[in-house]
Amino acid sequence: MAHYVITEPCIGTKDTACVSVCPVDCIHPRKDEKSYETEKMLYIDPDHCIDCGACQPACPVEAIFRDEDVPPEYKHYIEINAHHFGRTIKAKD
Image (cartoon, rainbow, N blue to C red; front, side, top):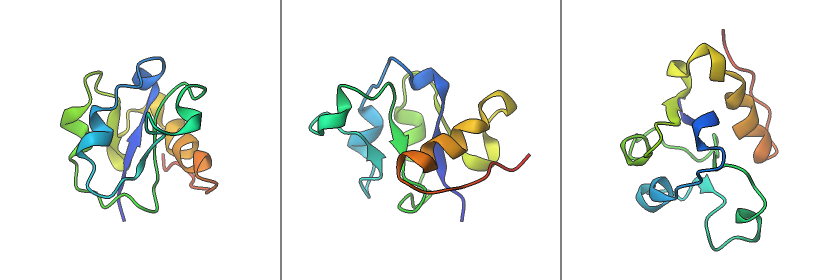
């Protein structure tokens, strides 16, 4: 199943507009979570993302892509997002 991935443009921005529109609460950390202050970006849980796409237009820095549409220079963020949630996913070339 496809899912969405947050990539490099989110680093340092952490705008939570995407969190607000996610119907399944798969984007973390939220502002009310302890790790929000220490994390440098937000992450999408690949096991909980339902591929609805609501987050993508909400992102003001265009950091969110479907996993199959992630630009080559950001492909490693597929693994970074999964790793944040203790999972392993290999990016497809």
